[in-house]
Image (cartoon, rainbow, N blue to C red; front, side, top):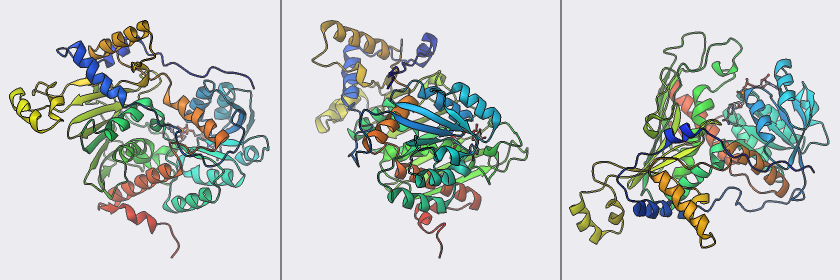
Length: 471
Ligand SMILES: NC(=O)c1ccc[n+]([C@@H]2O[C@H](COP(=O)([O-])OP(=O)(O)OC[C@H]3O[C@@H](n4cnc5c(N)ncnc54)[C@H](O)[C@@H]3O)[C@@H](O)[C@H]2O)c1
């Protein structure tokens, strides 16, 4: 087995790091270090830390895989596979000649190119298959792959129709030795994992609301053959964009929605598309929490990160603090900021401190507004094992973060971690962080949110259990 580099350090420009930096002027170094320490203490990564289902292959063997759909996302994955050790691409497939040619150029390992995916699935030398085709083809191809005995990675949104939710659950449940992973890469980001742990430790109090947006300008351009624009092949903005962020809300709230209401319209791009060009959704979760969601195609301003980013991100709001977070892109890496909820005035806080331990934290805020601190990752955590020099370096880096001179970055792109983790699950039988049920909950939310907008009513999530089933 040939060795490849095991990690891909993100390499954003210095200016983008500065742009992303936080504004934190008056806090002292000692305070910043204390607060940052509390955040890093929350880090003990959980990705892949799941009960072992079954040992499928020797833990050190190479995973031989194929990839179906070498369009935009397929090519992106082929590029990222080059940065991940432990796999060998044996075949790729696309029905389109141009896409297949580009895939072959991009792919590692000089794979065979085929136009019929069944030929790829018939290869005895492939253990696993990644599916990056349009949404309406996910289920039939995933089904055939599972029936062919392959481990599967399928892009989000996992399935398209209610009946596919039920059929896929049955198919995968009947095949516990086969891995089923979904392309929800935020689950593999250290920032998101840290945010989840901060919530679990109560660091932002009770989380009551998530605001998420993925706004674009001008949005998807009209092309007659663009499958994303038509209802018979696509779930529109809800499936293509919101699905990622609904999954974040489910994960952070630790539950699934009870119902959804929404308004969507083809209001600005009246060009023949049949999916909405703007959607506004509210999901209600069991404890009264809400996910407020926006995706529009006429403005891409992002009211987060002091305007340094555009388009997409999530704001996680708790009774004692807020987290702003984005997975970023290959050029602008993931970023997370943590704001203290503006506390009572200092004199009130002194009184409050006597009553609640939580009030001591609010003494650090001015009472004029929340203050942001970067969310720190494990690599910035100071441990007893650090040498004097290493400790000083970490203190210095954290000091620079707290002053907004630079921002922390994930060591590895979550997409690389996601692919790496898929290989690991195939080798060891571990359960993926983005597994079947994560994918099905996400797809159900997409299907039901679209229904809520189409029918102009409150759609309850329990309805999915009756939908798509024969009477
Ligand atoms: N996780 C993410 O962040 C992310 C990002 C982009 C796209 N995606 C998902 O990836 C999937 C593909 O999106 P895309 O942007 O690459 O679309 P695309 O249109 O660029 O590519 C899809 C490719 O699939 C091919 N194809 C269609 N039917 C096929 C079949 N039966 N057999 C083989 N090939 C077939 C098409 O010819 C095309 O080349 C979608 O589900 C999308 O939601 C996920």
